Length: 303
Length: 289
Image (tube, rainbow over all chains, first blue to last red; front, side, top):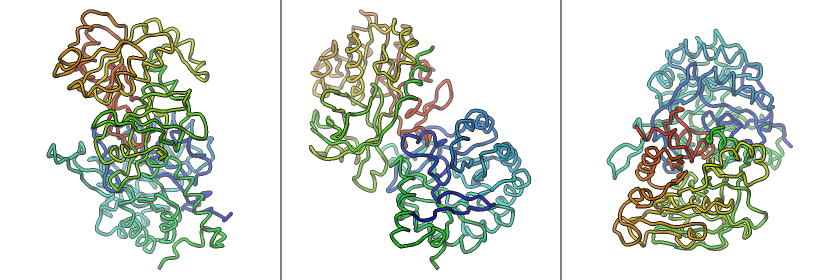
């Protein structure tokens, strides 16, 4: 049994590098029949905003070659509902609970973060400045250094625990944004969010998704994600969390070797609801079979 | 307690499984439909309710990446069999239609809430039994209206109703007589009425035009099929003040209420068809506006 603990910034340690990606694992409870939640490194619960959001109209999903597009649009019941109704259900389950936070202005993000700061058993938040499916905010902040800085600075003033910032791949140079986020006080970065895409229905001669475009996820985007994780890991000193199309332990190991200190599993949960625990076991088995005593020995080993 | 909430309770208590089921038989019941009879060779199949569904893994190609949600068509506990009626509509279901006896099919089940039943048939539902009995009084003469592949969950629903001493009436619609599916199976559990658009079987027209609707009084309607048909049924039920439930089939990804892709607009806001449904009280949907 190899040592699997990893550090994801701000002094926060995970028992293993396998986390779930926001918006793909609900509040974790939906997967309790398939996964012992306390054996995961961390669970990032779905995007939460200051006020409730109904999200975009149906249809919100299109299947693509080795992946899918979604334009859910951050449907959630708001941070107050989370604190009052969801948090009590989660807080005694022994994993690292992280809330993904989104907003439409820096003040929004900061207020939402401040509310979550008060929750004892939530040691971190992940700032979503990269959602491609909302008009008011989201990715608008994540595609410029100035926008990213404004949100991270505002949140950093009101939030005192580990601050992860989730980056958008829909930019010319992701390393530039990652450095801006680091300089503004982020403890770590996670990448990549979905790639903006589109699907067409040729019979109806129109776009499939209700808002026309959506975010592409799944194994189709893994090579892009790996490249960006590798680039960002060489550009910042803070830990990097890698995600994008991970389906297997082998995929996860590729991200770790490219410089990710931990990984998130997203769309794969829809194909195999028990995939996260299989990836954790698979990483351990690979390390054992190669006589590597700690996962930290392989992180960032690819030049 | 309102029925919708009772269904929520039942669903919450049911454990979900990932199972590799074995194909016992694949029967081509129509040029576009295949009936799969599946079994678990290791152990008894888990408890499932009518109206629930399975998310089926398709291992075909790059374009069959996501699981396919398929209604539970029937459960035969004596034979330890689960029946899935598969309509061949795309690459995934085409692959499912090629399965042969002995092949494996990976299923996540049981998912969703299911139709209201008069009795909680299973032991672990006893905590809500008292509440359920209080609503069974108006479930003595249910009408089950189906069209297309939507007839699938009504078979298991009819079987469960019959087991509970209630004989349902089935009203099944199709374009023509050759499109009517599993009539011999339906007739085991209740009276079967039929409409066809070309008049080649039963009464000519749509299900909502069948004479039984004018001649008899039903205390509840359960429907599954094309959305325009279900909307027409919901309007009829509303006008006659009859309790009505419909099973929806919005496009979905996870099947577990995690991705929020399959939402339907309701009086309670956007709800997940996979978790809050697929069965809804039609008065809660925004279909009548």
